[in-house]
Amino acid sequence: MKLLLVGYGKMGRLIDELAPAHGCEVAGRIDVGVGDWAVPADVAVDFSTAEALVGHFPRYVERRLPVVVGTTGWSAHAAALKEQAERARLGVVASANFSIGVNLFQLITAEAARLMQAHEQYGAWIHEAHHAAKRDAPSGTALLLRDVMVEAGYARPIDMSSTRAGTIPGTHTIGFDAASDTIELTHTARDRRGFAAGALLAARWIQGRQGWYTMADVLRRS
Image (cartoon, rainbow, N blue to C red; front, side, top):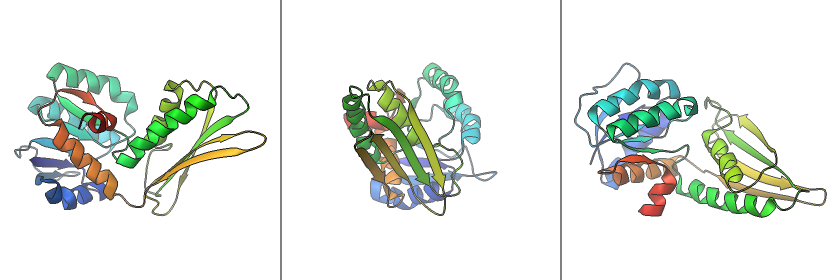
């Protein structure tokens, strides 16, 4: 399977490094002002920026090139991008986080929120920490965890906070606090290899498929 890597920052380079072990060949690399969009490829993997993704997406539509989107911060454009993909019958896997562990953490979070909804003495919060260069705050994963809690029935306010410092690869904590005790659940990423491996799994999975999917769909249907 031939990949077109779009965005050649830390994640793009790591995906490039791991691709051969996952049965993938990197056919082309696109970065700011560099790269050939015409290179033949089976799937694009886009870890660029939110602004860049909006500009790249018509290229995927035009070529009907399936795409794995790991970029975050583009939720304001989600409806328009999904409409373009639907018209073109394009295959897309978009996720704020491609880590298998994080996606399992979402399921645990949903169950915790469902149980806690009945106990009004507990307030809830989400805190996330990432490296200093990460632009969006709160992270896409934190927003996803919040949405998972709400969808599970947690109707009370959920306080959200962020830390940006050093080279932290990613830590997400959900917590519930009452007068007598505190409950915390935390996922900590040791490095970015798990995210890259998940993106490569999604790239192989989306071949030959149409529609808009998440990493949870990939794990459920693999």
